[in-house]
Amino acid sequence: LSKGRQVYFGSTGKAAIDFFTSQGYECPAYTNPTEYFLDLVNTDFKPEQQKVVDTLSAAFSSILKPSLPKAEVNDPAQYTGAQEAGYVGRFLILFQRMLHQSVKNPYIYLVRVVMYVALSFMVGTMYSGVGTTARESEDLLEASQAAQSL
Image (cartoon, rainbow, N blue to C red; front, side, top):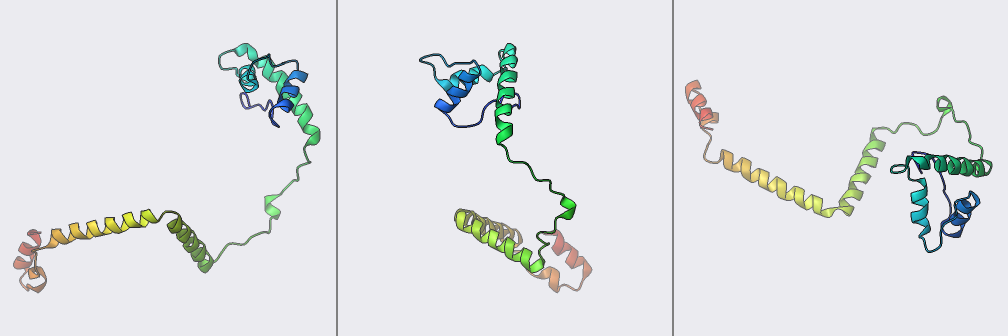
């Protein structure tokens, strides 16, 4: 690809060298063909190479077009394939995906367990020593004082 245009796609090695040679761009001796091809189609540093890209792209598309199968025209409005899954189907699909993820990454669940234990410890220490005075008090003043002590 060069500037979004396909210059060559196919086998590497002799087939690629033969294609570029047939277009008049023979790879010099003792040169890596891949580096030569990239230098040939790179227009970032040599804008004059755009003519080469145009030539190679036109040659490749003329070779490619006869070999491509004819595309089918698909109208999305006439698609009657799969229907929407129900609630149970969605649940089963998501549950299966979750099981696959848990098998692939068991350490994530270990991290979650550690995180929940740490969170419960923090919340527990936040409320330790508060007691039950706010729940047992019938007096509004005592209840508000107990709530403020939090």
